[in-house]
Length: 382
Image 1 (cartoon, helix red, strand yellow):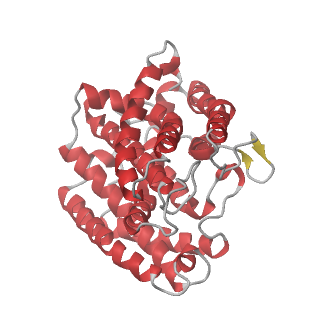
Image 2: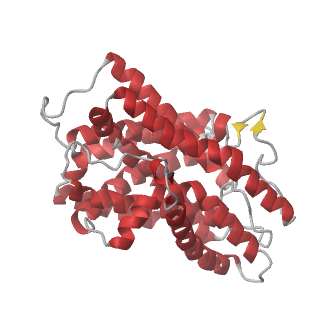
């Protein structure tokens, strides 16, 4: 999904922590989709029919914390490699490679994987909760499923190429790097992002699906972090997070995570419940948007600091997993849906199934991805 080259330097070892972050983020994607399968909030290809009518509180907590940052983090890490790749390859080759790396998997998912999952669900008598029976839905467009993110990266990259046609990027070393923002600036960015998100959700509440399966209530975060990712690469911010700033963001992130279950519990026990949080001109929706975006910037900064300081190393297994992460993103729906169907008839509580299926889905997805990338020529695309 992103070029493996480093941001502005050939010293690849400094990128090992980013590779490890990619492993974490793709695993969180599977966590989120597995949680939805077993009753967590959200939509997915298959929801286990044996789920209780209420959402398990622990899954609601997991989904809320995960959703606050994980796809924004994915966007940030993906964008971090755009500028160095562009400067190294030139615009024409960069655009060609981007179309290959993003466009071919997107088409494969729409034309092959989506129909396969639909046939799998129909063969087992499972309902089709998403518009999988047809390749083109007249309202939402192609059934992109989780590949909406790849389509978004294509559009965002195209917009950036149009931008640099008028404002070419500076050559490496020609402009002194700008200093990394301090804690107050990062917190201010989170607050501003929360305000913009709350305004958007007055008109487009959470759960609203638009063209290409885009969920626009989350897009202020994705767009902002794509821009930040390019800016961070230009100034090498990921490599220079001071310990004082990293510790402050980590402590703040932990505090925001710890208060989230209490906030969620209060919301669920309030008349109107989750509906008031989803959007509209409600105090609960505004407060949630502010918490969500503040948690986003603090968790992301904390993780980058922790990984750059403590996890800037790899063995052969983690090295392979990092290389396979994009392929895991493309193919994990097949693995997760297959496992979920296999366990659908097993008489176990929702959380027990979640605890069993999740590690299996992560492990099998990475193994399958590695086997797929071993096919000659596939690694040029995936």
